[in-house]
Amino acid sequence: DAGITQSPRYKITETGRQVTLMCHQTWSHSYMFWYRQDLGHGLRLIYYSAAADITDKGEVPDGYVVSRSKTENFPLTLESATRSQTSVYFCASKPGSYTGELFFGEGSRLTVL
Amino acid sequence: AQTVTQSQPEMSVQEAETVTLSCTYDTSENNYYLFWYKQPPSRQMILVIRQEAYKQQNATENRFSVNFQKAAKSFSLKISDSQLGDTAMYFCAFMKREATNNDMRFGAGTRLTVKP
Image (tube, rainbow over all chains, first blue to last red; front, side):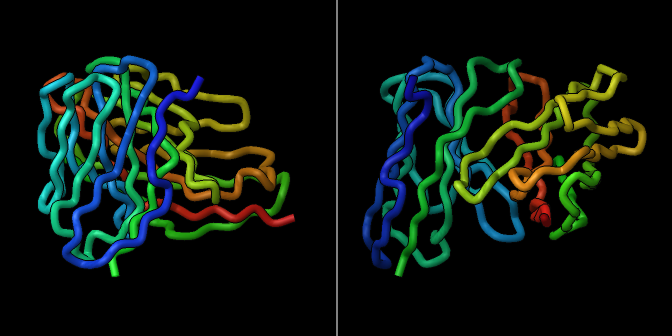
């Protein structure tokens, strides 16, 4: 019963490098989300996906790329990491559009030096 | 755009006492969900309680209850008989019910410390 898993849990990288955060869910949920958590801002939506091959921007999408070729995977890529992208990243999922609750992964802490 | 405001960055309470965390939100929508999530030091986001806007009755989950005031756009969380394990960040969140937008908006959080 793995649920939703993120990897890596911790990552340190340098400015300008490409970084990919992985998210995998075993529930076959339709919707998946990427949030970033920063002090004073709570969680803010980066991108979300309603189904495989369907993605859309959230509140803070700049500098990030997502894809969803399979229902269970939703990777988040920082194409050229910047210090402002130092944050804790959460992947989340939910079964359908009218179900309110989000199920979260354990988070990935990314530090960009 | 919907906004969620938690005006108490930090709060503390003695073990076994009751504490109330405040949350207000701004929306023109009529159908929506409101949530309280708990984030302990482990960083895991855990759903504490959920309220559907069309329901007038306040949601309760064991020691956790809400005071939902739709007209005032207020959604406070009451924790009764506080326990040390309640120490965590608490986030209030709002989500429109319509399928066209599934963005869950979060407040900045309230850090709650339960003191022995």
